[in-house]
Figure 1 (tube, one colour):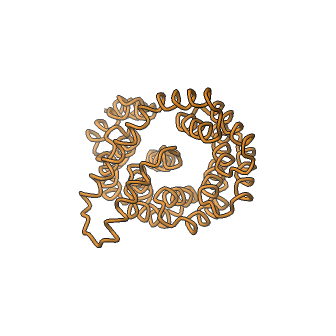
Figure 2 (cartoon, rainbow, N blue to C red; figure 1 turned 90 degrees about the vertical axis):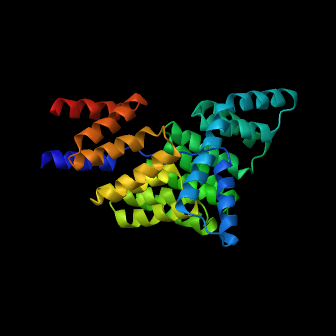
Length: 298
């Protein structure tokens, strides 16, 4: 009984990346591509959707491989002609690389040049939140919303910060507002689903994850829905979602670890060990811990 309780706890606490932000618009372009197919009433199979999701994910990875060059180009442009656009773009790149102090410095420059730039405030807020300075982050998002109350991303950013503060009801309120302003955002549905999951409302979480996937399938939405299914004891559906997450992103260590937890729960130690080993080899510490724990039981 104690072991089952611990495994369920691990399923609840398993790491997800649903609240990670990206400074590129590649996923949005992929979304627009699928929306066009929907508008044209073209039949898109699940296999085609997974292929497109994997294709756009690979393009996003390629974008981030080149972000150092993009930062260098922004720096050269700023040296020649300091301007808000280059500071903003470089700040977003630093934010994506989790270089929060550098991001904050650049967003400060944007705000100094244009005090009414709402985007600079909520992106600076995201950087403050990354440093654990959540109250300052919320202040920035509040300022952004006062400047542009119709910017869905400002509410999304504040919702993510409330989620980080474990104020899930406030997070859900902000995600609701963001969705009302931008109902075709896969990411915001996923984020709201995660807030519901942390409240133990797994059915509502699954509903939101399914909406996210219907708009555009991402590896983290499949992983997150797999976690919710796992917490409901629907292990076959959880495994199916982890499989799809891995199809899109074969290097997603969390999905291997989470699938290993389900296999272990089902008593399939050999498959659990294989998944934990993959997660460990990819550098996921909890995957290594789970691997050693199961090996000691053999």
